Image: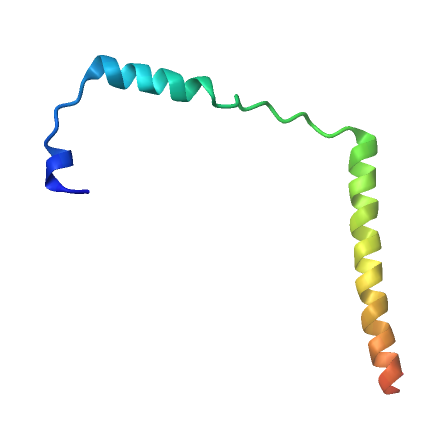
Length: 68
């Protein structure tokens, strides 16, 4: 920004109109619902499956080397 832009006077009414237009397009933040029991169970099972999958990949890699 140049010094010329900093020295311009601010029109409060115009700035309020600009802010109102910008706020008009904002999406209001919604409250996050708490997870239900079934959603918690699904999330837990998903993490268990991911851990088992990664563990299986490591086991397969080590087995292919003949260490076990």
